[in-house]
Image 1 (cartoon, helix red, strand yellow):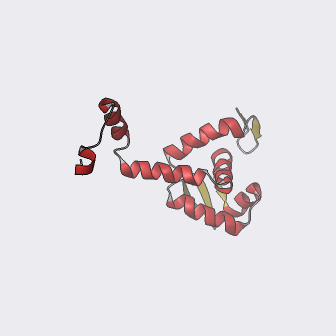
Image 2 (cartoon, helix red, strand yellow):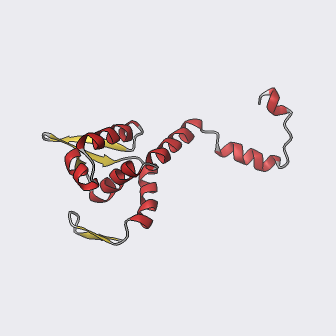
Image 3 (cartoon, helix red, strand yellow):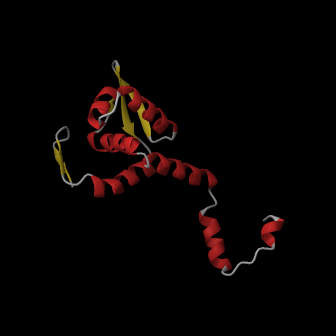
Length: 129
């Protein structure tokens, strides 16, 4: 603890200790903030929700589905890949993208409850409920 913090007045030391403990993993905290920041953009969120529910898609199909240009989708996917939120895999000449990461998947499940609703997913032959 730094000298400046040693002299700080603390009212509820046990609660302050608990608060500091949950913030101890600075790397995970930074990653979580980056994931939430990426989800805060409607275009990136649309891309992630499309991938989350429709499955692996290539850039052109994803661009059509979300109503963006191929280059805008590619740019967004680069950022999402950098944050570990999507991964790419080659299938013949195509590169397909998928959602990755437990935090990303869990957050998309929560967002989907309010955004997606009851939708028939044709490619998977099931309802989303």
